[in-house]
Length: 424
Ligand code: HEM
Image (cartoon, rainbow, N blue to C red; front, top):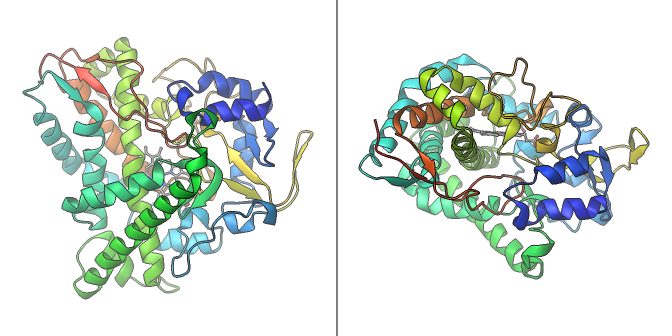
């Protein structure tokens, strides 16, 4: 198989349950030139180098013209800071951070712990009378959504509306043909038969992105008149040392946080429960030693990360790695999940081992775009997996593998049916 064929199979939905053998194939060529002119990087060291390289942009406006059949950001909308480069990126991220706490900061985390446990407890109580539950529907999805809504100041009861838009946007996120406002649009793969619907899919996605931005704009208008104690109000009213965000910057930031905050952690919790059920000895040990959940979550971010491909990068200059030169203007796809299992970086990479000494992984990316929500995501996953492990009696998988969501970039089960003998 050529590298392009390997990558095509990775994007194909048919292989979503286990892309790891294909990643191993891809790593044989650390920097692979694909037939469409883009480059896929799959080894740990090379990915880390590019994440920290100032010649690598996250801004699609830097793509060479022949890749630019991609939509510009529609007029009136600002690109979210995940696809903006420094110094503009740093200004926006810094302003948002004033209301969120820096990555690794215990402030946000410490204060939220009791509230998070209360939310998870209520969700697990609701399935106490059953003997079978879909863990995605009952815990993994509603939990982070409730949390991000509270933090941002988005009414929880509006969830059915923004969930539909957000799903429309992320179901197709991934490396491929074109871009959506906050990240990338995937080709769903050669085997899926969806390629010819592309214009319709792109239109649907654009409409969803527009509707979500309109919704957030409406909330922002209301908060400007009557501010609350939430992040949305904070962004609207707070002027940092060099001024605050414009209304459209607030809208794009809150939209980004809303989507990122509720389409990623769901996969970490669901991938986590699936992995624990496939490793009953680890599950049992976590039940006996609750502190082990910290190592479990860290190892999950390496072994089954929710984000396989971050926003596609662009080379701002010719970049030579080994004997390959990525030309200026070319798209660069960073295969984070392949890097996480690189045997030159980690010993026994195919083993799920929550007791690894130094677990340096790419689960939250790296460099200036390192995940903004990492402390929150870690705490959410620790709380949910800790409580599920402690309370579900004798949990068993109903189907292995479970059905997966379509996206190759944000990967996780669509449903995770589990049988159990009651709830403690
Ligand atoms: C960025 C992963 C949860 C907000 C990223 C990136 C990754 C990632 C890999 C880097 C993207 C890139 O380089 O293009 C995850 C995972 C999560 C998670 C695996 C859950 C398990 C969250 C949460 C929030 C969040 C809960 C918000 C509350 C963001 C934002 C960025 C980001 C705003 C962009 C940062 C920047 O451009 O400076 N995340 N994330 N994430 N994440 Fe997360």
